[in-house]
Length: 163
Image 1 (cartoon, helix red, strand yellow):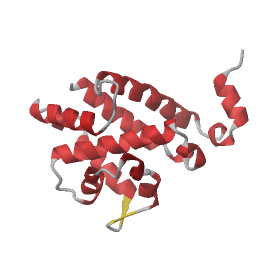
Image 2 (tube, helix red, strand yellow; image 1 turned 90 degrees about the vertical axis):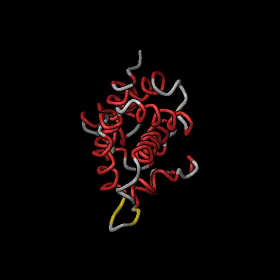
Image 3 (cartoon, rainbow, N blue to C red; image 1 turned 180 degrees about the horizontal axis):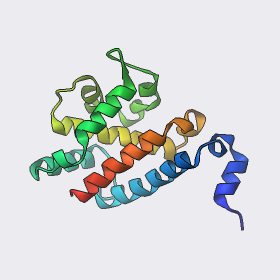
Image 4 (tube, helix red, strand yellow; image 1 turned 135 degrees about the horizontal axis):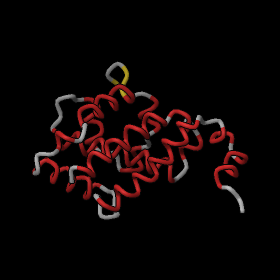
């Protein structure tokens, strides 16, 4: 029987060179995203489900319990340099999600409405998912994803616990 982790380590140095913590964060992200999409997004991560989730959290007054502002600051620090988008922003490949305006608004305007911030954050986490599931992260910077994966997992867990 082939051990999948051993096999991918032998096949791909991009993965074998990751630290145990990086590998763990990526695996946890896959697991938590799958559960999150099933339980919170009715098995369909998209603009409609993100908007519905944001409205529900706002209506229930639980939007302040999910760590949204901390994640917004993290994303702003990661994707904006000197008031403009940087190369890490480009690597999100937001055009594949039809360039959701909430992301740009959330990243460039710290005074955005909570719903806009939440939808923007959800789209970035969704891009993490798509870039991992569909392969672009294998082409570049898989090793720089530990913090992204960990923060995204914590965010999704807080949302699950508050819905």
